[in-house]
Image 1 (tube, helix red, strand yellow):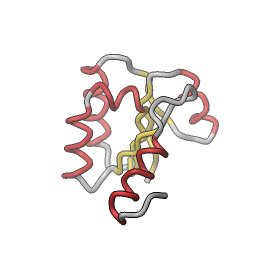
Image 2 (cartoon, rainbow, N blue to C red; image 1 turned 30 degrees about the vertical axis):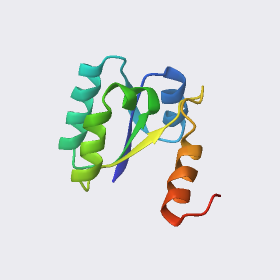
Image 3 (cartoon, rainbow, N blue to C red; image 1 turned 180 degrees about the horizontal axis):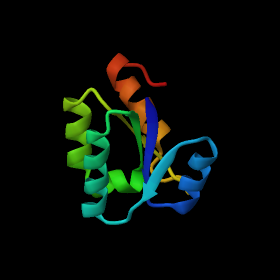
Image 4 (spheres, rainbow, N blue to C red; image 1 turned 90 degrees about the vertical axis):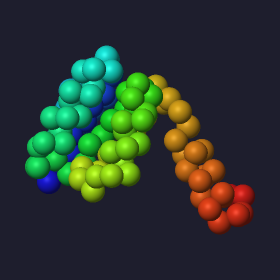
Length: 102
C-alpha cells in the first residue's frame, strides 16, 4: 500500500516526494474530483493525503468518502503555510466527546 498526495502547493509536493510520496498539484474543484476518482480506482493507494485548501473546495464529497469508504484512508493535511488549525479542532472534538476541556 502506498500514499498519494493531492495538493495545491508545489512546496508541499516537493517535501512529500523527498520521503517517497507521489502526488499531483491541482487548483480547480473539477480537477481535484478527477484526481480523487483516479485514486479511488487505484487499489495500490491506501492513504490519500489532501491539503486543507482542497478539502475546502469539495467538503461534501470528502465527508461522504470518509464515511462510506474503507479505502483509501483520506487524511487532511495543512500545507506549509498552515491553514485551519487542525489541532484545535481535534481538541474540540475530544473535549465535546468526553465532556472535559483539554
